[in-house]
Image (cartoon, rainbow, N blue to C red; front, side, top):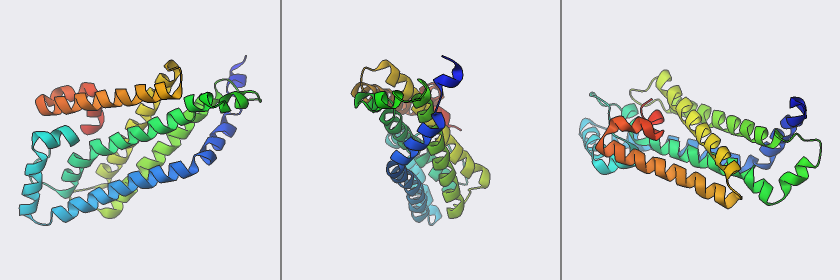
Length: 234
């Protein structure tokens, strides 16, 4: 089988997946972007004066908050944007990872379990086309999520924020989400069914998040090895 035959109808499948998943995609995008906007607005409301900022920074510097969101590494004078990055970067990345796990399994192993993939392959569709179409879908979803998040932060215009920081946040969560989508696609090939793929994917995510929490509390230099450090320290 030639390369073109192995990837035949990839574009058609990509459009079909996007149409089929449009409601779920919309809900996820609204949820993630809404959470980014709500988080920024909440932090703005909690940091109205220097006393409130100092109280918020003190809370973020505790081990429990470091375990949840990552260590607070900003330097004085503290800005709303620095507080937002410290408290929302890891959490948003976690949601992006969950979203990618959902869509990666939905259009690969789950489609195979319910027999849809066999029906699709019965037509003039390449053997690699379903996987490639899923990759394209994940790529587009993550790009849109990152783009909308960056634009939302620019519109809110937090104190201390700039265009570079807003777009770095958007690009960072997009790449992080896509990376977990790739991990899930790999695990889906190793699992025997969608339940197994889901369990393996969330187990990997949970282990990495737990390791990040441990290193952020005990020795932050090792957080780079947990993958979460790549988005936390960008």
